[in-house]
Amino acid sequence: MGRKLQKLVVSPFPTQIHAISMIHEGRFQTLDQCLIREYRMSLQGISGQTSTDFCEGVRARMVDKDFAPKWDPPSLEYVSQDMVDRYFSPLSAFEPELDLPIKQREAFT
Image 1: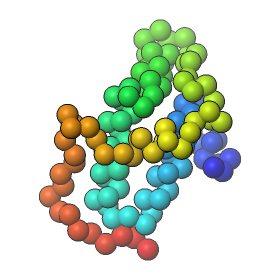
Image 2: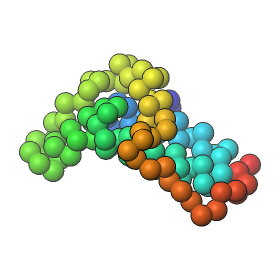
Image 3: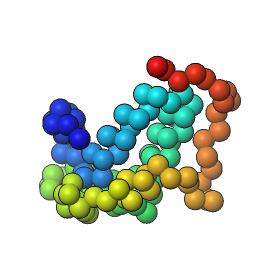
Image 4: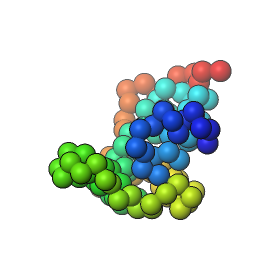
């Protein structure tokens, strides 16, 4: 991942940086595919099943206001590809997939 991306994200949690880099793949997907990917990523992020970083970030900024999150994993080098892939994986049986009214759009090229 490039330094520009790291500079753009203020106080990122490690899994967020990897996830952001994977979004770049969306340049070659349809709008529907991008929206579904974003929906999955959002639900996976707040569910706490892949990582508790979202809740930890809320705690550090809004609850305790200590601005000292304790990320798990603690740094980027400990984030595995498997962890990142889970953000984009299909949702559990308890969460409905995003059902968009229009299924076909052309990808931007």
